[in-house]
Amino acid sequence: MTEVEELIYQQDGLQREVMLYFHDLLENNYGLLAKITFKNPCYYGNSWICYLKPLKNGKVELAFMRGNELSNDQGILKSNGRKQLRSIEISELKEIPLDAVEEILNEAILLDQTQPYESKRKSKES
Image (cartoon, rainbow, N blue to C red; front, side, top):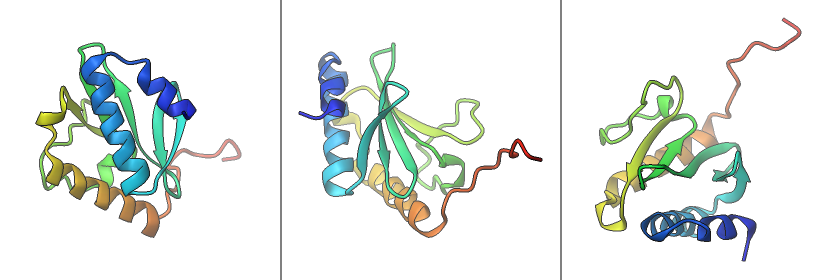
């Protein structure tokens, strides 16, 4: 069992189920590399694409690092006041809008492959 899977198995009930589903989807179907970053499962292609986070309200957040650059044609990504991140909160497997999530994942991976991430932060030398 990997370090990421161990972390996921520490979650309770529905959160574990949702996180395992997305972990399998992201790692096996999309070929993303799973690592633990900031105590959460994070998924990488050329750069950090998304992460899973168990929330205190019992839901799981699937957040996209460059969400502000995604089209969100599906209308399910929320900013929650954040400039760059966009996410969807999921309570249980049966409520996952699979087609919409897969469209967003495909777009996020394509963005990662075709337009390398460039930090907008000013360097300390400036």
